[in-house]
Image: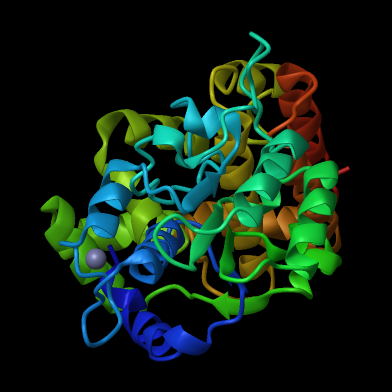
Length: 359
Ligand SMILES: [Zn+2]
């Protein structure tokens, strides 16, 4: 499906349907519906009797196979942890809708077969398995689609292997890559793709959609959206009481620093996936930076006073250093060597930053 705020971008893309570049990189913030958008694109490109505007008909056999996850000319590459029903939106926060990941042969399952934890990477054997797929002619027509989501989950070896295929595409094969973090993809991959940037919906439109979708009032919808940085699908997760409880716990813990001891705070976060607490901590620090330079908080407008007090104590230089340091943590959330150490290290740095001037 195409979420309504992405409809203008969708129509523009459909208008160029026949002249699309063979590799498309769809990027934009997490939680806006990029995955569903990419799925819909693949479906429409494979459809055998598209509607006048280029969208999939939903009735032909290609549409039927696609819906069942077994179109012979479609491959989906995702980390094994996603395919095996793990936490698909590894990015925490991410909250991208895993549209139609019904399984079937459309993705290579070679990722995590060793009996250990399913891999969070897209691995080289998954990419190599594509080579045969792209060399054999399409079963139904000329078009074959490879959807790689999230594209930044490819490890270095996988990205290298893909490069070869991207450089010499066999006729009719199209690649669609999806990512929240285009910078995390090798420049060599990016440069071989046409990019399509999707963006956050306007706040009012997002709030109206969310309120209607989950049946809450506009004020509640706005509060959730703020906490989700404006991304509607991330915000929608807060309608789930379990998710909302985790979010509250993380925010309370983060907001309690530096008065709360590091060990106590780390205990509180012990069972929270790193991707979630890192994302919240990053949002908290962004708000501290904003307040420090006189801007209103973006994520935690209801905690402006607390943010103001902490920001004055820390100073901008210390907050900037802290933000840079958390960026590094964010890159490691999928591969924490020692989650407990990771949380304690981060919290120690937060405490140091927030007491920078007090000493
Ligand atoms: Zn169709």
